[in-house]
Image (cartoon, rainbow, N blue to C red; front, top):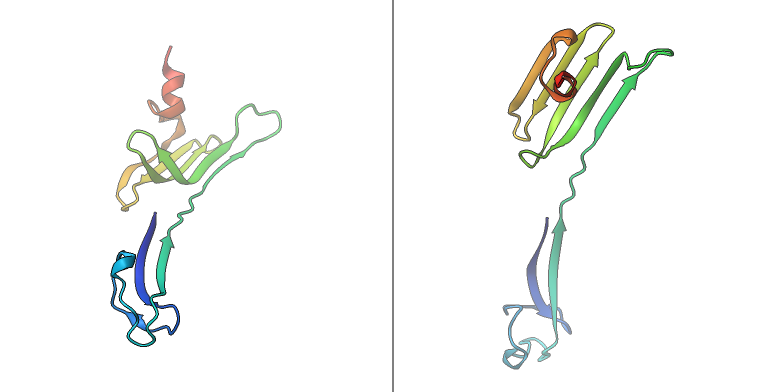
Length: 133
């Protein structure tokens, strides 16, 4: 988001602050009371906001194993259905048979929180796709 505001108008020759609208037509500009100049300096302030977000995705694998024994992700993830970033913490631990996931909206509201045996995790994400037969 970028915003700009005029903070002041002053005489370019003597620096005196002038009470004049920045969009005053050139023909209506009155001479500076201090030095008589019609030259003006307009001070404009611009502000910009940049928000950085990150998402880390990780996997722990063992030689000879097809699937990772533990995998997860944490950070800001874009939700296409509602059009907003949500904080996500997710771990699928095959070695200890655990699945946990917490999804939080920007206002702190918890949208989804799950902690269950991985073997019982059904009907969401890749578990949903695997059950289509």
